[in-house]
Image (cartoon, rainbow, N blue to C red):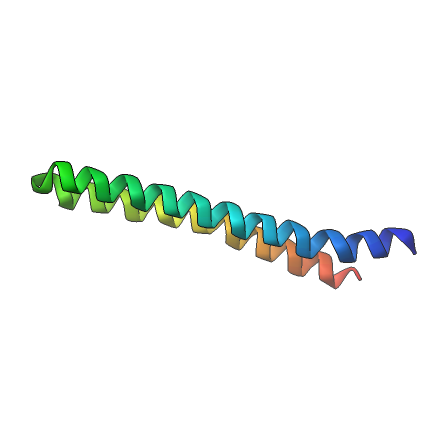
Amino acid sequence: MLEMNLLGLGIPLGLGLAAIGSGIGLGNAVNGAMQAMGRQPEAAGKIQTAMVIGAAFIEALTIYALIIAFQGLGKL
């Protein structure tokens, strides 16, 4: 019974931490890309491409956390 209560508490907390981490990571990535584009406007295309690929990897980690959360909720 205690394990189920801890699982019910841990799943939303873990998912929330993953979302917070993803938001911070995306904010830092976009901030760095915007500053780089401001310094070198001629390289904006390459910088933007790299930023979008990096953002996709950051979001993928959050989606993995969501999938694990749904699997954990299935055990409750």
